Image (cartoon, rainbow, N blue to C red; front, top):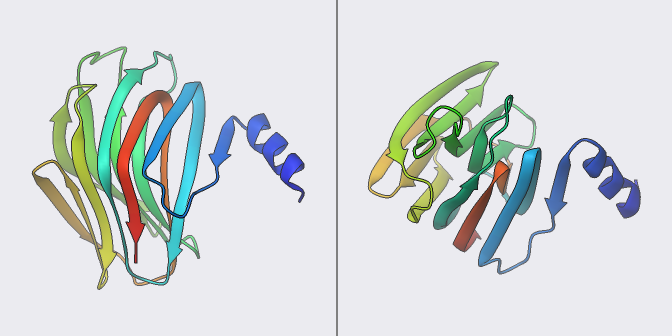
Length: 172
């Protein structure tokens, strides 16, 4: 598929992809109501780490969609996903966001709380996969879960929000 058709397809489904840069240091993710934006950070065989700081500066009200800022790892074979999510529900909790590590595997989902935070807070984060485990750290809170060793892609993104990722680094 040509680049133009790929971009048109992403626009049609409400997504946009931002090409990763070798030394990405900052990613301003801006997605309108019901829209998503994603940046691919890199791929790894079975170990990898994304570190940086995250801040949600704007949650957009939408009757159906929640505000999301996330860093995620997705197994190449689709067998699992690990996400460090910041979730906002501006219609219900205007000044508070929920942070969690979410694992999707074998059609089941597990979520591990990393606490609540206020929009605009700037927090350091780290998401790591190594030795069959994924570890998420946000500020001083950490959660861990098992995942099978498999090649994966690392991504940063947002939906229905404006999220700033700074000091963003992916390593293997």
